[in-house]
Length: 400
Ligand SMILES: Nc1nc2c(ncn2[C@@H]2O[C@H](COP(=O)(O)OP(=O)(O)OP(=O)(O)O)[C@@H](O)[C@H]2O)c(=O)[nH]1
Ligand SMILES: [Mg+2]
Image 1 (tube, helix red, strand yellow):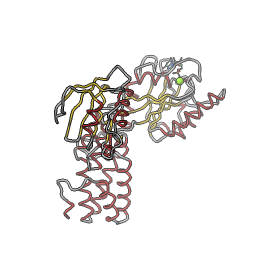
Image 2 (cartoon, helix red, strand yellow):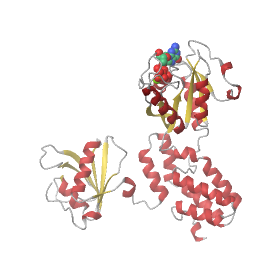
Image 3 (cartoon, protein in one colour):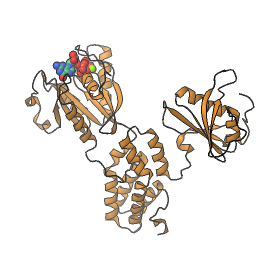
Image 4 (cartoon, protein in one colour):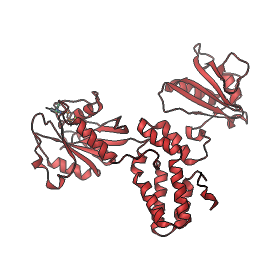
């Protein structure tokens, strides 16, 4: 491209960022802001008008590069005196070309969160997590935080700490931390791992939950060598389902590596479904698996179409672990299992408007503050909580 206002001192003050959800998507929006935003866009997009008016929408042709006869159709909107949006097709290749073209023309590339002019750290984080959120239900909770639920709760907490009302501060922090695990999984899916000996039906269950033939199913034990992870939703919450290699004494090196990977997956899981073949019952392998499994576990007795589950083979201390009878062949028990998974991950659903910390940094500060309150150090708790906040809201406690 020629005639771009690149390398000028002003140009590096002009930033460009992809400001829509991760690609691919239907449409990608690239924002350009800064002193040379309008002239850069004018140099990159052919538009049949002499000036870009604020608030107007223009159709244009993005000149990918001078050697290319084809040009991408784009929509250009000037959203402010020094701000323009370019809307193009949401394929990764085309939006990358547009961004690279803008950088070549003198823009500095920034991330979506650096693009945000939002000064409040909670609102900025909620905006960015909303972009990444994959389910309506998770998005609704994040939207509540964007609209102030967490900020208001922190304002009240600050007021309590300033007034040295430590029992109140303690119960407010305890209530906030009750939702920490839930909040951290609004934009990061819960990880569900299906584990068990070979041939129990892990891949069959993966496919039954996903409703598609994602994993290879075969009567030959040791079919799954690697692991597969698939993103889906259960009860409206984002989850990933990981199918693993069957755990046993490996017959070859590849299988041994598969078993190692399966064991590593267990350690990263939020919930493990330990699968038992109803024809075989509970074995030593299951006991070993259980030792590595996280706190949330479900025992699934599969192939109940062939034989009734023999609960007697289960050690007595495991009789209270949630369990379910399944048949991946005729679908029996799949709905019950999905319900158990949902209850295991989200035993209580917050009411609309409840304050939820949704970032590691927020949860960390809340935990530190609770410890400080227990140590009778409200000023330590206060400084940690202040670092999370947006500044004064309607409670106006900054005046205190
Ligand atoms: N009758 C019956 N057969 C099943 C059921 N679930 C799975 N199978 C069969 O059991 C065999 C093994 O199923 P997979 O889903 O491949 O088992 P897996 O646990 O993934 O096996 P590996 O990958 O080898 O560890 C296949 O022939 C399936 O059709 C079930 O509920 N009932
Ligand atoms: Mg398998």
